[in-house]
Image (cartoon, rainbow, N blue to C red; front, side, top):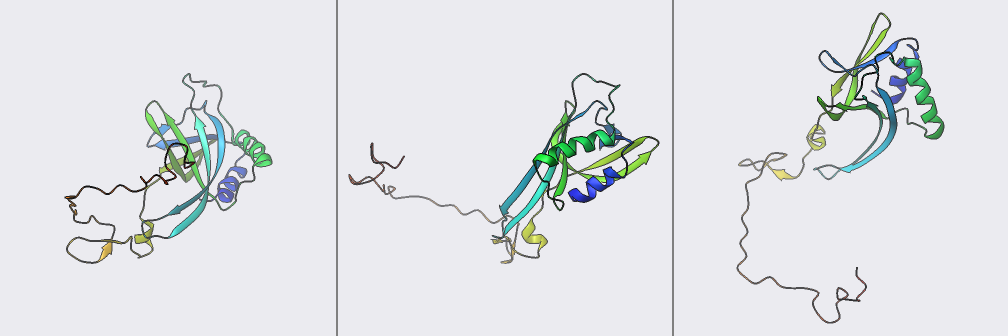
Length: 187
């Protein structure tokens, strides 16, 4: 889900109480805080040697150690926090949205907003786990490794190659003129 869609969904439900379900029947405590909203441009090179780039907006939730049950955040409060952020940091409307959360029973992780449920005065965002993927295989490409016993390229394991060194390793850069000497200016 992109940032524009996520924010539009919130804008359509300003008077509801915003809650997040991070696992089946497990909700972020109603006294949570939105501690920060991060804009994260990602640039990577995948195992197939292709450069990828995308942007994420990460909404970080903090659950206090002492529950403040009388403090349920309404969607309108979350929107006011978003407005403060967007005045200082323009958020890319096409960025992928992730919600970052963890507590003493659930390791901190980034999750995607999945299904949105409205029941009574509650607006619940069901969070779904992030996952890893091989972008090269997703493009029907190759990551450049050979599949054992097939000769075809894929992300499978390759047979181990054992290299034995029988000669003394050659030292390089040890001449008097080397820049990597005390006072040589290389460090």
